[in-house]
Image (cartoon, rainbow, N blue to C red; front, side, top):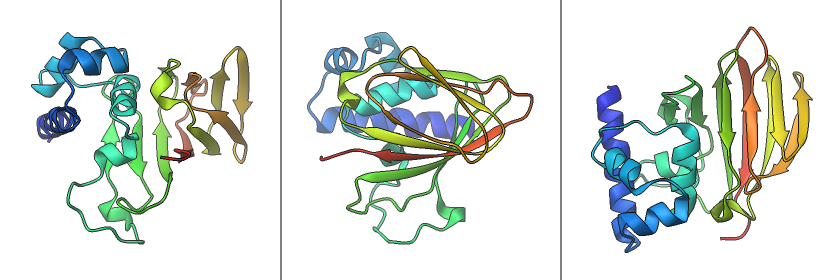
Length: 189
């Protein structure tokens, strides 16, 4: 199953890159991910981390939710839990579930995340994500969000708003998994 997902991710990146007329070098330059790593992902020889995949997606003009949406899937205003795409970060084990219905005209994605105790994911500043914003709403556990030089310590029920393109760090300092929702606004497309 994991190998199938790696192959599907690689095929999807290659297809999107070619549809946009981008070479490996073009995508590497736009994403800040090495040409060699993109090539290895496209050939299913490497599993991208959350941070790396987010940078590649942003350079392709997509959110992670859009990337994982089933191609050719008919748009529906209803997204049933059993049909929602799930992806697990190979580095941290964090699991993201795309909650919002794919293929709609909405500029907003809703993502449900289970974040293991002690896990940390860094999303460096990236120009392709400028103009995008997100709310992080914590349901369970603890979460430290670093935005620029500011560290925000979130407790259940807290919600933090921030720009996406400026870079940020998710960290679960607790001894239990954290569960939170990300409401990602792409702004105008």
